[in-house]
Image (cartoon, rainbow, N blue to C red; front, top):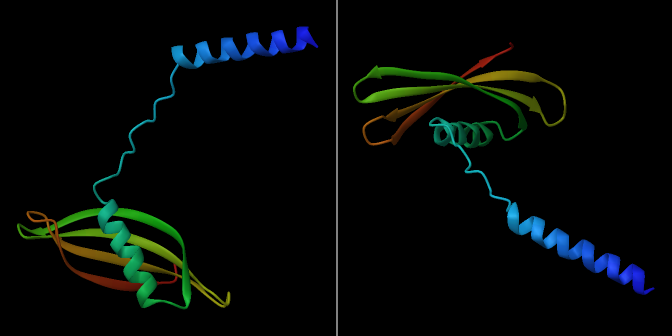
Length: 112
């Protein structure tokens, strides 16, 4: 019994030293510049299509319309909750790149 408790003590002691020598450091989470607009695209699409679930998400890219309006483009894949249909929705989020202010959103359905 003494040998088991001594072995356990030595193991715990060595483990504590190892943890002190090799601390676990959390990596910073990288959020891409389009993440804010992607969240808006998903939330607004869920509001527009409450009978469907968003099952896939693709960031297509950013387009500069002019100096005061940019578009962040996404394609979302939706599945009806009853399983009757799947379809895509191209979502364009308009915003002012100077102020980062939301301006509007457009949707275009597609079967691909």
